[in-house]
Image 1: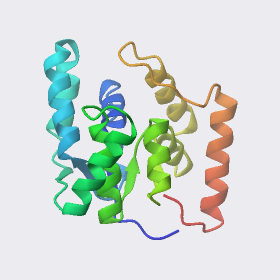
Image 2 (image 1 turned 135 degrees about the vertical axis):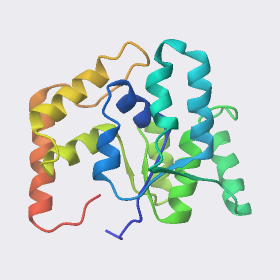
Image 3 (image 1 turned 30 degrees about the vertical axis):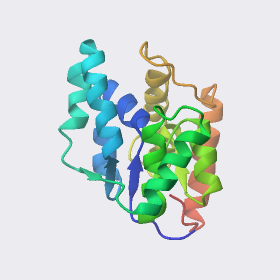
Image 4 (image 1 turned 90 degrees about the vertical axis):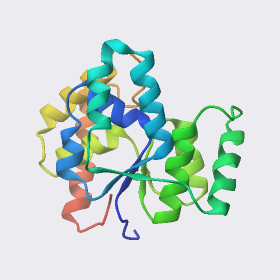
Length: 192
């Protein structure tokens, strides 16, 4: 796998980890972390629309380790608009589209949970990981125990605001993923 320069986030992963008070994992364990301007706008909008979780979302706004990236190149601006049109709603999916475009431009890993965004990323040769993938990585690296990583997964899937649809339905499936990731790491495979 080609070496990557860091991670660029869509809104969902940041929101979910902030809502369960675990955003610190990203700061402590990942190389450079980037946030598209469009995602910052989505978070600002979320703070206004959901005052009951305002303090949780403000933690994202205050995260100085999240470096803002903007789409500036003309061909990137075109791709950004094309991706939004591909999804059928030009006024939605700005965060996913921006994360994909910026990951492609800057050789970053896009952190996206939605299937549509992940499919688009793959079609453009952009490496993508989701929230569950990050939790698996943290467990495999020993950053947190598998128990803690599973508990974080359960907290995210149990959030009342915004249903998180995880493909992992039980602890055994989660532990199998952690084991597979650990095996790949111990064999020297360069993954995420």
